Image 1: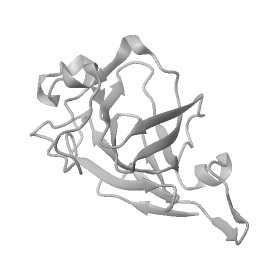
Image 2 (image 1 turned 180 degrees about the vertical axis):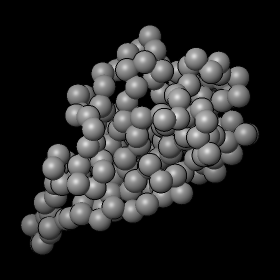
Image 3 (image 1 turned 90 degrees about the horizontal axis):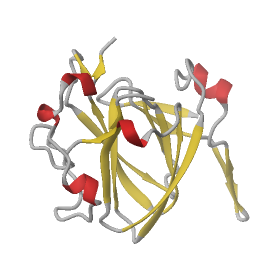
Image 4 (image 1 turned 60 degrees about the horizontal axis):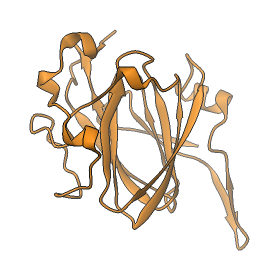
Length: 186
């Protein structure tokens, strides 16, 4: 397993060891001890697994929960996405900064997004089957969405006219979200 640092030190790209031959391949998508040694999921357990299917040019996010705050380990089972994490920890020197990475079934990379970060993705293949582990349960009453194209964040999405949910269409810029609904930098 190879762990790659990003411009946001808490966000990590993971390249699992992949063993393949003419029959196919095998890889561990999660192994608690090995990932904990790499500083991923070391302080909490994953409590929920999610599976998302989306079509090309769909943007989901930027989502986060202000209660039941989640860290996530994300990876693609089929297709590809441009995956994004945004630091929303008040007081962090990286507040409002983002990092993006291509995750695909071909590159088999994973992205670890810790607590205190908003998450979103854009589908870059015709369809995608996207999986992620979360360290807390989904709480729809405490989920918020930051405007996908917030000019102060400046994400360089690979699409200019995405397909958005009603919720994401009406999300707010980060600067308009009340401090009580953002994470604190510890």
